[in-house]
Amino acid sequence: MDSRTRFEAIYRAHSGAVRTYASRRAGSQMADDAVADVFVVAWRRLDDVPEDALPWLFAVARRVLANKRRAISRDTALRTRIAGEQMTQPHSGSLTAERDAAVLEALARLSDRDREALLLVAWDGLTPTRAARALEMAPNTFSARLSRARRRFQLELDAITHRSVRRRSSTKAEVRR
Amino acid sequence: MSDGVIDLIRDANPYPMELPGPSIDNVLVRIEQGIELDDPGRDSRWPLKDSAGRLRRRRQGGSRALIAASAALTVVIAIGMVVLLRHERTLPLRSTTRPAGAGFGLRDAFAALRRPRTPADVLPSGRQWTSRRDHVDDHASRLVFSHGSSRMWLVPGQHTACLVGTHGLGAGCTTGAAAVERGFVAGIIGRKGPWRWQGLLPDDARNLHVAFADGSTRRVAVNQSGAFLVRLSRPADLRYSTASGRTVSVSGGPSFRSVQGTRRAPSMGGGPPVVTDRPCHLTVRYVSSAAGTGDVFSMFKVQNDGPGACSVVRYPSVRLLGSDGRPLTPFENRVDAFGFVSHPIRSLRSHATGYFQLVFRPLNPSGSRRCGPAAHTAGITFASTPEIRVALPEIGNKRREPINPCPRSSFSVTRVTRLP
Image 1 (tube, chains in turn blue, orange):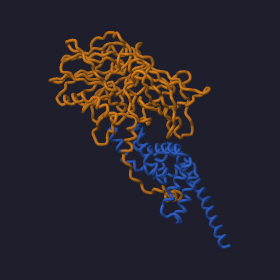
Image 2: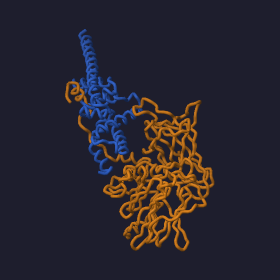
Image 3: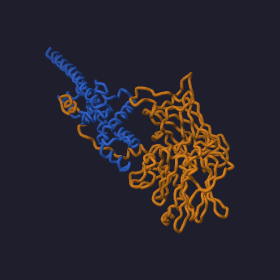
Image 4: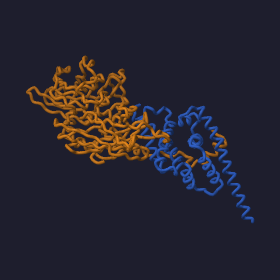
């Protein structure tokens, strides 16, 4: 297979996944731009792209998004982006939306690495082995990180839920008064 | 993988379904930036739009028509790529008459290897050619010539270089040292004519012409990569001067077999064949840097202070030197340039100015740390000049606007253009 054919095959197979990856992390506006950047890198470094290209492409996308975020501003980091995307979801105000908002807030409180470990598995559907490749770390290291991230996420989520429950009960008390 | 936490996060996914992939056109436009393409392409998507190519084709319209017409007629007997006499292997790589600092590797000798690689540079699949065993690198090939359906690619290797043509143009390899010194030349004769010379000369070869039996001569134009293809109605020898001052004379004719003797040329100045003999004198100075989207764009100004025109037709070669005058970690300027967009210029007339940019990343991939050290001097080489050293401005003992690409990263250089 020559380079062109291979590049096109990779693009056909994975451009959707890379776009989704970028959209989930940086919003849809930045995603198409990021996809183009990722595949330009893939073309330049076609020899480096492994047979299982998706983790490699995610690794590049992560860097591309990091560069773009830096270029715009730190204020538009994941927290704002995710929150912004989520606010456009239809059922805001429902219990599900409330729970999702708490999940997103908990994710935003995690370190970049912890969050990325969780998202690669939960949102992008990678197995731990492939996710480890995307983060350029050994599978065992990734497993440890994932387990730690999961624990930290749970703590953050509990704190957020506890806070909102307290807020709700104090609001009810005020209403009764 | 499924557990409570992962399921919870999965449910909060703002894009639960995979989105369709965007059009590949966005990628192709990015790849296009900062590059030129010669290949008219074999399918609708490859290659990209080619404004530089259109201009060039307009300029080359006459010879293109001639070649396209005769290409259909010719059944070719390839007599061979050249190739140099065995004793050439013993020539010193470094000739004393070669412009100082010009570099002596293939990359320094052939402009095509210094520009970014493009889709057009990929060798056609299924093309069989020789010397694979000599560790040539197919993935570093560059398209050096394109006329109608005729194309030639330069394929470098560690100690070898090959010129590979489309069918009818043949293929051949020589040692890297020989390629640097004398390039590739092949004489090819159609069964009923016409005569044809083709090849690729290093940047600083000059005075390429054909000499007929009656003593008349005709100058042969080379393209921006140093490649040429000339068709003749009668037999003629091909002659040119190498960087070391040798005049190479290659005999044409049905019995053509090999390169003949050489003699010392009276004029030994550098410069590619497209440059006039009037001296030119380029000076380069650093202008300023600007940053954007993670890249730094450092602008350099080129001025010709000599009475003759200077060729700036190819990508400048840039070396970065540290405080001790030694080259910093070697960087590979292979990436596409996202610098200013403007038409590159071919030559600078007397007292004219042009600009080019160096584009690099000053931060490590995570963006947390500035890379170093910063360059104190830049060594810039054009095809027609020895290396020009440019001191980079400083404040105190620090660089005013540091040029500090990260080690093992790549930087890109744009062509010279008229406007900053």
